[in-house]
Length: 408
Image (cartoon, rainbow, N blue to C red; front, side):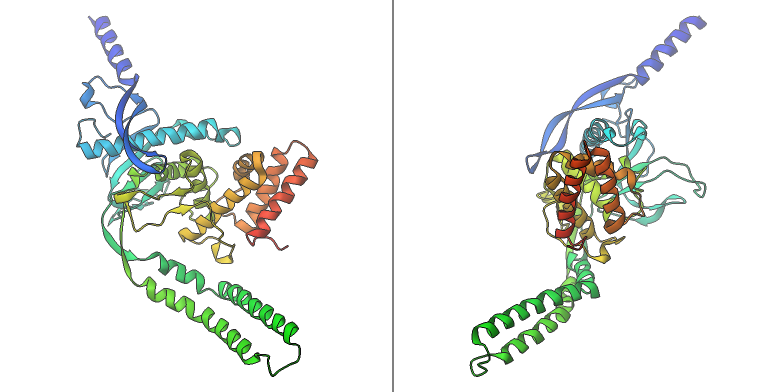
């Protein structure tokens, strides 16, 4: 009797741990547009219950709702199941990419461990208590495991916060702080005065010393206007920035945002995701673009993204000292564009150099010095020979000069 009972328990245990797949409707990108299509979810853990009571608990991801610790059931509300299926599918896509492509250069053994994914999370993160009694909406958070100071125990998690229509400052308010910095003003003033000087010189060469026909007063007024516009521009942007805008972002239904958040987890051993810098934000944008094939992240998301600017890898933003360790999304966009420029310039070696450089970086790394040095070391690793290495470094320098990171 005991033997029969033992065999029965063994069968049930085996069934509980068996993997299974299921086809479900999920949100995907069809080219640039969002649409719903059937996709196969793999590596789910089958439990000894009817199909409709299976859950989104898999070998690598456990999808839960808000503050719950129980996996979302296939029998939950249609909206919640749709979100859970979308998250599970795209997280699997992202994991496959990192396992197949990125592990060629980086050690990412932690990707074989299960992480918890919270859908429609409503609370803000607390490093001591897991979450605070403070609501947080419209975004996504990457959570590291608990530590010795924590009152609870948890592992790495990704939170997709509940979407809610709110009013907030416009993106111009953040831009105002950037353009109001003295370094930016000096750079802008220098460019404008240079144009004035060129105009002045051209007139002088044409008119010579004929002051009767030479409009020196006009040139002086132009210079005064240049100084004035540099001082007034930030104030005007600040005034416009005070206008509130509607904001609504359902992050779990935008595939490239899911890729971005998983990239944070994947790169955590190198770039701690609780540290917000241009580098720690720019790299996940880069990988989200590689996985999705999109030049713009978060664009054309219709009702799922209201008031949040798309992040483009094609930009001409110049380097600025305020970009180091700033929490502004604009600086992550600069680094995203910089990586794109480097990849294009270095050709077939570009992606390898960019990915391999991560192992020489950490969350304290700055762009101008640490990232530059990491790229040079990475080129030495990747290049086939000394001649190839030198050629790649020359190409790299041309990009850095163009972006204002290196003097010509």
